[in-house]
Length: 320
Image (cartoon, rainbow, N blue to C red; front, top):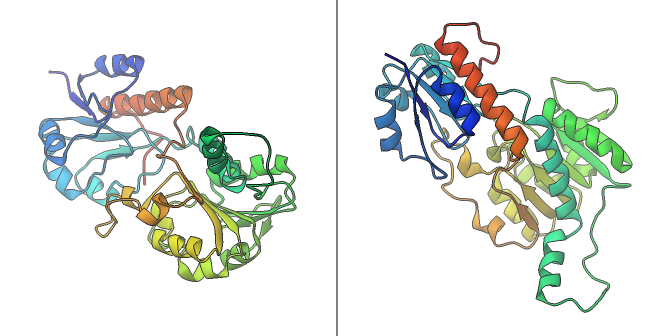
């Protein structure tokens, strides 16, 4: 009898074909995630699961999946997966550590330019009726600016590599575990107090939740552009709304939100309306890796991890 593989979002046909070589595949046609009850129903006799950003796995999930042996995550950050509970249940968890780096860094730069140069407001004004140039919508450019990157892992370093080509006056870095020669290493408070642009590329762990809170934002340079492509809950969205209202922040651009951090029991259930209803925000729906070629590579990498796990082969992308 072939193992049952549950895939929680639609995948490329070549990836599906690869999985069908080793098991019986049940796939969510998407794009909406299954309800918790539906997922539990599919997992009750599943041997493997391919998971995506909309999924969470905790002890309750595992109780409904007694045969589950492996979870292959088609994503980089695995903070929505209770790794301790998975280990106790004998379930291996793999992820895709590097394929999301470049497209996420590209998006971070795009968000910064869109926020700093009033791209959304300019688009709306042009569509409303354009009669020629007017002295309006002056913003902030990257050239000649001071830019900080908070979190100097792969994504943070990729953001820095792109910023290096924009002629920034200074490039600052914040990370207690990493030191880079090509940037000025500073504290979080120094970065916020001196930077025109701040990029957040920080994972969500116990000591980074609300790393950017009201205290930090009160220190920020007036008119600062804050860009978040790390994790939503690294930022206190309510504090960002207040900082936008008192014009301490010039703009906030984000691809990630607090409501997405499923394992946090007190997470908000929606994006803060003060971000939604604000002309000085640029908000994208977690599209950091939404490049067709990249998504295919991510899915295939996750599929190969799943196949190796089912065959009992050694795994290189294990989440620890």
